[in-house]
Image 1 (cartoon, one colour):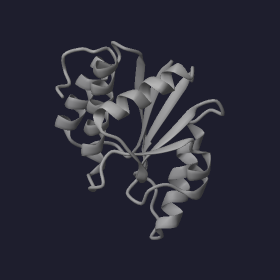
Image 2 (cartoon, one colour; image 1 turned 45 degrees about the horizontal axis):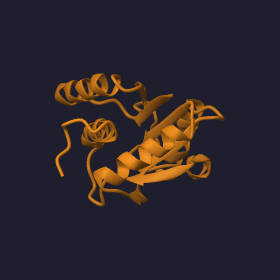
Image 3 (cartoon, helix red, strand yellow; image 1 turned 120 degrees about the horizontal axis):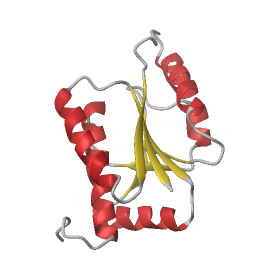
Amino acid sequence: MKITLIVVGKTTLAEVKSVCEEYHKRINRYLKFEETVIDNSSIRFNDADKVKEREGELILKRISATDFLILLDEKGKEFNSEQYAAYVENLMLQSHKNICFVIGGAYGFSKEVYARANAKLCLSRMTFSHQIIRILFAEQLYRAFTIIRKEPYHHQ
């Protein structure tokens, strides 16, 4: 099994890259994990719907028909860390070959991406920059694996 994080937009902060890389290394101890960055810097529309449509096309090009697609979305299901670990463990038991989590662009997702999604997950009701959400996602995925394995990282 593999988990892929698809993110729309490049990160510009070296500190964010560094922290993400550290958590990616930690996650790779448990299973294959990779991050795919969609460069949206050339998308220049004054219309948010057109931006979402073009970004959606780019997202869908990176998803195979068999991938389990989870959107990180403010209207998604919320979990605490233990519940999220149970959710991840359940996904692993379902024998998905690839689970794709997606962080969308500034305007969210297109109708087509929502239609393709298998699930939506909300990391917080607060709004975070796309830079910070990468770190939050990676840390919580790593935390989930330590909870599943009963390793001493998460304290209740």
